[in-house]
Structure formats: structure tokens, C-alpha cells
Image 1 (cartoon, helix red, strand yellow):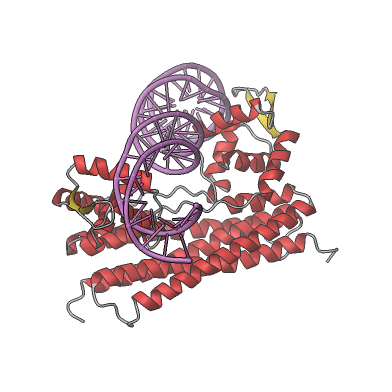
Image 2 (cartoon, chains in turn cyan, orange, brown, green; image 1 turned 60 degrees about the vertical axis):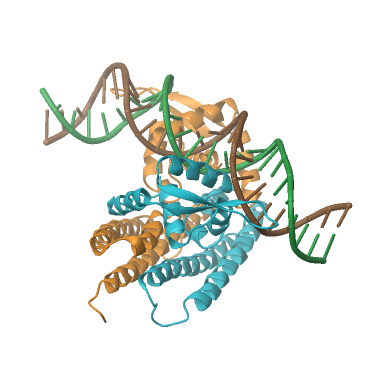
Length: 186
Length: 186
DNA sequence: TGTAACATGTAATCCGTTACATGATTGA
DNA sequence: TCAATCATGTAACGGATTACATGTTACA
């Protein structure tokens, strides 16, 4: 389990309320770890009882109070220990690949529907790539990153960009393959 | 949920016992969907009560009997319906990326440990790529695939190959970035 | 007046993982 | 004799998802 550790990294980068954390998990952190606000509140509570994080009550005008969470020394120690542990092999769940192999057992109409769906999926990934590239121009404009944190955030973002480019190229391959199946006798 | 559908595709490609299915989920199918034998037996039972699959008792000499499962017409119908449905956005869980961003808060010794871990991880992915390429030479030797099933299996495999190549290139980027952090003042 | 954003939770259910369990055959 | 492979399960636990729940402010 690494949601605790993802939250620790997020809080070390910038202390935040549960709500703000949930929003960051929808944006930058969500590129490599997703979590809903329900999960985040539950895990924050557990981390608080373990002494990994501490909350500071922040009163706001015209808004509900919030609790700003920070990583505490035991949390930093737990993170350091986890960083030394081997990376767990990831559970792969690639639904589109299942559908593509399943298309062998669909009729032409079913395959046409899948082509349309792959095209839609491709548009989504084009948008994701565009967002990543815009984020890169905005957050890492210099050729060399100023500090360790920026350099590491940047290399993770470059990973996301490389992933999206690979996906787009592969989806073109998939579309060409699917369309070839129903070509009138090549 | 798509484990049911992954099992349907696997059984349409080739009827199999639960044990054989589990082994295929460790190999070719495991490239895009992982499942343990416990999951598979549980889901097969559910699919049987739903009429999606049927079992044929196969007696064997010198081996325990096995039940060979096949996809039944209601299963094929369920698969066709699922193929038309939109692809669900995938939950991203990329532990290594969390660790890399976490490295900003580690000391040089902790970062050195991470470099070693990334190198080990890279060796694993080199091995995976080599297996994929060997499988491609073995199963798809011709320039053009003979039928729809082969063409679709091949394009999914090409996706795996493209993914592994992307990962290896990115890991080189990661290693260079991590090593630069502790360079004596560039 | 209604919707989106801010802010924090509980409850139920489902799914996945881990551990446990059994028993036969083949080959080193 | 011991390990690996074949073959099929049950049970417990924990994590993730989905639905429900509440209340405020800003803005169209």
C-alpha cells in the first residue's frame, strides 16, 4: 500500500487540507496515483493516530474552517524507510487491450463500435498530452531545473509525456489493424 | 469490472480449466490483466450460475479430473454488449513515480538506495521486453498475420513492446536525473 | 434560483490479496 | 525423498468504490 506514502510526499511538497489534497490527486499527483476524497479522509485519520501527520486548524472568513495537514517526523521516517523498500510489481489492468482481443469474436458492427470507441479514447489521450505539455512549459521553462524537487517532478512529468506519446502511436496502430480486418479482401 | 470479460475472451480463444486459465493469466493475458487462481475460481463459479460459461468434465489418467470451461451464448452476448460500452478510465497506481518525487525529501544515502532499486527495476523490464520480442518472433513470424485473431493478439503484443521500450528509455532519464542531484557542484 | 466550488465526513458493498487446505503424479 | 506441477477450492482481511449526508459562499 502506498496511498499513505503518496499523501506524505504531497504534504511534504505543500501542506494542505483534505479537500485540497483530493484536488491535487485529481491533477498533478493523479498522473501516477489516484485517490478519492473518501479514501483521503480515512487514511489521513489513520495517519494522524499513527503520528505521521499533524493538523493545524485554520479559520477562514466566509468559508468552513479547514485543517491544514503537515507531515510529522515519524511520517518522514516512514517515508524514508518505504523509499528503501523494493518497488512492488504493479497489477496490470488494461481494459482496452481486453476489448481489442475480444474484437476477434465480435461481428463487423461490434468492431465498428470499437473503432469509434478507440477514436474517442485517442482524443482523450491527445488532450492529456496537451495538458502535460502545457504544464511542462508553465512549470519547467528552464533547460535546467533549479533544485532537486523541480528536477524530480520534471522527470516524472516527462514520464507521463512519454507514456501519452507511446499510447497515441499505439492507438494509431490499433486503429489501422482494426480497420484492416473489415477491408474488402486486400 | 472486467475480469469476467477477460475470462470470456480467454475461453473463446481456447477453452481451459481454471488452473490453465490461471497459468495463462500469468503469461500472455497477464500482460494486460492480472488475476490469481483464487479470483478465477470464484468468478468462474459466478459466471456458471449466470449461464455465461459451461463446464465439461474431463477425466485424465494419472491426474486429477479437470473441468474444461467454455464460453456459452449468454457469455458471448454479455461480451458483445461490454465491447460496445465506453472504456472506463483506468486507475493509475505508479509506485515508482511516488518514490521518485519522494526522493526530493531523502538524504543522499536514501537517494543512492533508490538509484539501486531503479537499476534493479530496469533489469526486470529489460527481461520483460526480451520475452515479448521472443514471443513475437515465435507467434507472429510472418509480416502479415493470417487471421483477425492473430492480428489483434499481435497488435496488443506490439503495445506491450512499445510500453516496455518507453519505460526503459524513461528509466534511463530517471537514473541520469537522480545521479545529477548528488553530483559535486556541476 | 440554482449551480459550482469549498469542506468534511459515514455506510454499504464489492473486489483483491493473503493465507490456509487437500491430494495426486512426475522426475531429480 | 523432496520439489515441482497439476488441480480445485475456502476463509479472513483490508482496501477501494459508490452512494449517501450536511452545510456554506460566490456567482450567473
